[in-house]
Amino acid sequence: MSLATVFVINHQTLKIQRNPRRRRSIIRQFALTTSAHGIPGIARSQSKHNRIFWSICSIAFVAITLYFVIREIRNYFDYSTQTSVNMINEWPQYFPAFTICNLVPIRSDRFIKPFLDFTDMLNITRTNDSISISSNQAKYIADFLQIKVNQNETFDEFFFPLDTMLIKCTFNGRSCSAKNFTSFYSSTYGLCYTFNAKLKNMKNIQYSDEYGGPGNLNLRFYVHSHQYVPYIREGIGMIGMVHNNVQLPLIDSAGIALATGFKHRITYTKKTISYLRAPYSTCDDKIPSMMQAMFDNYQGAEYEYSEDICYELCIQVYVYQQCGCINPKQWNARSVLLPDTKEIIIAPLCNISDKCYSQAGYTFLTSTSLLDQYCSYCSQQCSITSFNLKTSMWKTPPTWLLDDIKKFAETSQIPLPIDWSTNWRSHIDSSYLSIELIHESNLVENYTQTETMTAVDVLSNVGGQTGLWIGVSFLSLMELAEMLYRLIRHQYYAIRRSRNNIEDDNKI
Ligand SMILES: *[C@@H]1O[C@H](CO)[C@@H](O)[C@H](O)[C@H]1NC(C)=O
Ligand SMILES: *[C@@H]1O[C@H](CO)[C@@H](O)[C@H](O)[C@H]1NC(C)=O
Ligand SMILES: *[C@@H]1O[C@H](CO)[C@@H](O)[C@H](O)[C@H]1NC(C)=O
Ligand SMILES: *[C@@H]1O[C@H](CO)[C@@H](O)[C@H](O)[C@H]1NC(C)=O
Ligand SMILES: *[C@@H]1O[C@H](CO)[C@@H](O)[C@H](O)[C@H]1NC(C)=O
Ligand SMILES: *[C@@H]1O[C@H](CO)[C@@H](O)[C@H](O)[C@H]1NC(C)=O
Image (tube, rainbow, N blue to C red; front, top):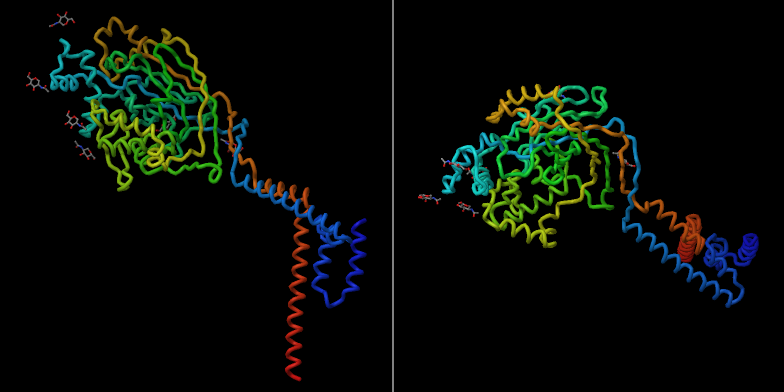
């Protein structure tokens, strides 16, 4: 109803003020008809008091609106996030990679002789035979290996090759062999072997339903525990890890223990976490060149960026700069990228007795400024895939399997124990284990980071605030634009008219 009144006033004003005060009339017409609240209130006020009241109200509410609008926009630029969880049915699903290592990496038949030569050189008293070592000698195993690494000698010969351990391998009923595994060096477990890792230039990853099976990997191993070099590790068995096909297995920290004498049943379900990219998080998937140099040692496996490894590598750079050598425990990753020269060098290992590396490592880890300086390129991973495992086990081997295992042990390249002919059953008991890795469910636990506020949310919040306090919408802005247009046009004609008048005057 008020709108009708407005129009009436409008017509009258237009009639009264024809040409002379045209500009004021344009503004006044806008003020009376605009859909923004407040301004018509001021324009139609008859008394001064009324006008002051409306002016104060309008200014106050515009200020309140501005406050809230600015707050909304600043909230948006905080880029806050939230995490949503859902279970999704992923089908088909890749079978994960499975990495396995012998618990004691070094076999004594190859190791003892060169090692005894080494301890003789250091004048350390021997035991009185040439096939065993004393606990005093065992303290020098690390030194022996460190010196070998620094002389660029490989010690592959000291490790157990996979084909001497793997009795049988089947995946979904299809048989596989040592050739279906890729190998790499772990600093703690020596040579480790991975089934189903992603290889470069090859679409080789198996789906869990490959060959029509349910996703079931069966492995039988003979670990040759009589050949374990003593004093290295307390325990007999293997260590395994289920991981993503493109993830480098950090088996030293994340592996699970597998004891001999049992059949281990491991079931897995998959879990993924994905992060939003910049500007919401600092995540990045780019592989730094130093990490690439490390990955190149992994037999053509194509691994993705890993934040944990990135930190290990940047600590190494610092230790190298401080000591001129790197932590001897990390003999498997000696490539160091020097930050000033951008050159990758093969760093020597520190002497075990030299404490420089542990000092430097400690200094580094307790200083945030060093961490920022050396590890600035270590960003967050954009996605993490992990597996929830359930393990349980049966006693093994049953008697019907003994003959097969016995035959395998006798034909493998590893020398048998001296008392094999009489004690083979107890040797098999302490060296045989089997593993069954089973796909449990297609449901994937999916954690996704999402933005708390999208651009559309900001727009609706701003709209809500302006609508609530001052009643301004985009069309109100159009009315303002219309008024400006009319003013400009009026001004333009006024100038033209006055110029014409001057010209006319000049003619006369
Ligand atoms: C070992 O003993 C021999 C003779 O006893 C000595 O000549 C040699 O220097 C010693 N070597 C070391 C490394 O101590
Ligand atoms: C070797 O050591 C054993 C005990 O460990 C001892 O009985 C034996 O006499 C020693 N043999 C020699 C040749 O010293
Ligand atoms: C081992 O290799 C590195 C790099 O290839 C080289 O700098 C170093 O001199 C070598 N060490 C020995 C003992 O040959
Ligand atoms: C093992 O590799 C061979 C080729 O090297 C392939 O034909 C076979 O299917 C693989 N087995 C499994 C179970 O992946
Ligand atoms: C390590 O020990 C060897 C001899 O045992 C010595 O020549 C070398 O200088 C030592 N290296 C460091 C970094 O202390
Ligand atoms: C998890 O969910 C997000 C969105 O809901 C989707 O983009 C992503 O592909 C899902 N992850 C997997 C492994 O399916």
